[in-house]
Length: 200
Image 1: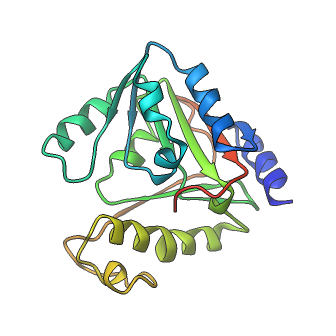
Image 2: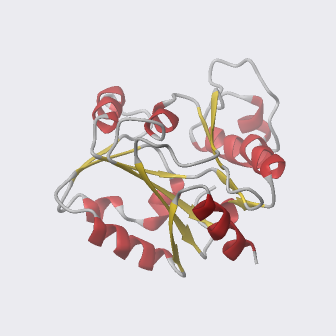
């Protein structure tokens, strides 16, 4: 089963892995684990589906920007300095436990590499791909087009909604790709796997 296999491959790569049947269980876990700290996060439909940020904001300081907000850059700077960073994984390779994320601004992927005490990566079962190649194709042909359309970007993938065109548009949102082959040595990193489809 993909869920069991990817759990083991992630653990072999040094990640702490917690598994949940439902998004409610995962949200309860995060709400319990995070208290009285500063939390940063990037734009994530998975976290939105989890409905966790309003809960965390009642007893933590949460820095979460909204696309198009006039203070988005300021909030992203604060999020980079937070003790904890919350994000989703765009794709996870079942075969080797590699975690792939693609980004336009770079705030999410940079925060997954350095500077926080702990990073949580949340992923529904739809984010699990059989191998590295299919995970990469998922980023280019599923994740990026859907996010570009949601953000109303003027890109071929957003306008046609079918695949990546490897465009040169100023609105392009797939500018940087980060692959976590192993856990970063300088940070505690935990992957939350949820047996539901969440986000893109």
